[in-house]
Image (cartoon, rainbow, N blue to C red; front, side, top):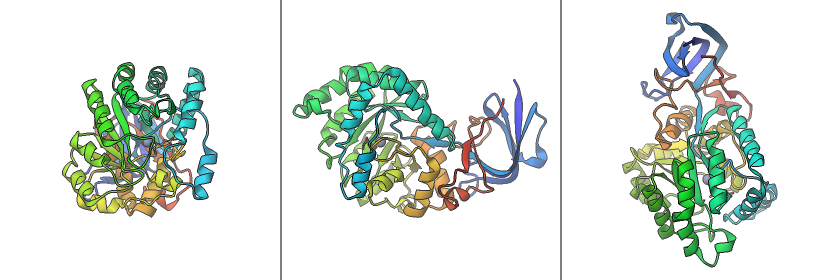
Amino acid sequence: MSSTVVTGIAELVTCDGTTTDGLGIIHDAAVVIEDGHVAWLGPASGTPMTDHHLDVGGRAVLPGFVDSHSHLVFAGDRGDEFAARMSGTSYDGGGIAASVTATRAATDDELRALVALRVAEMRAQGTTTVEIKSGYGLTIEDEARALRIAREFTTETTFLGAHVVPREYAEDRATYVELVTGPMLEAAAPHARWIDVFCEPHSPHAFTLDEARAVLVAGRAAGLELRVHGNQLGHGPGVLLAVDLGAASVDHCTYLSASDVNALADAADTTVATLLPGVEFSTRSPYPDAAALLQAGVSIALATDCNPGTCYSSSMPFVIALAVREMGLTPGEAVLAATTGSAKALRRGDIGRIVVGARADLTLLDAPSHVHLSYRAGVPIAKALDVQA
Ligand SMILES: N=CN[C@@H](CCC(=O)O)C(=O)O
Ligand SMILES: [Zn+2]
C-alpha cells in the first residue's frame, strides 16, 4: 500500500467540528493519504515519511463537495423554457414532459455519455460525491434504465418515478401511482438506494400529500430510504411529510411556515433541509432564509439540483456563492452545508470531513482561503484533487 503526503496547504478546512465555527481550520497543514483514505493530518512541521509527495503551493484544501441532489440522467435542452421564465413565465413542472420525451428517445450510450460529461463537469468544480435521480423515464423500463446508468457513476442513486404524472396518465393518476408503487418500484429498487417524490400542491403535474405518502411508504417497504422534493412552489405539506416519515432530507424548502421550521428543528438529527439556491436563481423565486434556519437549529445542506428545467448548473461553488449572497450564510457556514451538511443528507459519515479514516475526497482551491469561493464568485478556482495513493 503506497502513501502520499499533500503539503503546501495554506488553509486546511477539515469541517471536523472541533472549532466553534465547525470549520476546524489548520493553517500551513499537511494530509497523508493511504489507500484512498486520510491516514494523518496536522501542521506541516509534523509530517510523517511517505512514498509520494504533492505540494499544492500555498492553496486551500477542503473536503470534496457533496452534491446530494441532482437529476443528471436526461437528454434534450430546455433553454427556451428558461428564456421564457426570464420574461415572466412561471415554473409549474409542465416542462418536465419535454425532457421525458427526449430522454425516452435517447439510446443507453447517449444517456451514459451525457451523464459522464456532467459528472466530469462537477468534478472539475470540486464535487467528489453526487446523488443522481431518475425521473425522466416514467415507464418501468425507462426508470430502471436511468438508475442502471446512474449506478455506473455513484452509489447514491434515487428512484424518482414519482417526479410527475406522465401525460398518458393525466386523467388516471391513481393508476400511475399504482404503477410507481408496484411494478416500477420493483424494477427500480435493485438499482437504487433512495426513493423520492415531488410533493407539490401548486403543480398540477406533481403529487398530492396522500399520493406522496403512498409512494414513500411503498419505497420504504421495498428497502429504500426516503427523500422528498417539498415546499418548492409554495407552502405545502412536503416538509411535514418528510419529517413524519423520518426522511433523510427534504429538498427545496423555498416556502416554509413557522411550523415547518419548528418541525425541521425538532427533527434535526434525522431530516436535513437541503437548500437549492440555483433553483431560486433559475426560476426567479425568493430565496429561503438559510441563516434563520441555522438559528432555529435546523440541519441544512446545499446542493445544485442540476437538471434541465429549474437549474442547469452543476456548480457547487455557484451554489455556495448564492447561499452567502442571497441566503444569509457566512462563507464558512456555506462550506459546511456543502460538505458535512450534504453528507448528512445522504447519511454518510465517511465523506464531507477531512478526518483520519474518512475517504480522501479533497477539493483544491486556486486560492488561499475558503472565503474565496464566494468572494471570487464565478471564477473557476475549485477542482477535485487527484492524489496518487
Ligand atoms: N421539482 C421537481 N423536479 C426538478 C425540476 C425538474 C425539471 O423541471 O426538469 C427540481 O428539483 O426542481
Ligand atoms: Zn430536484
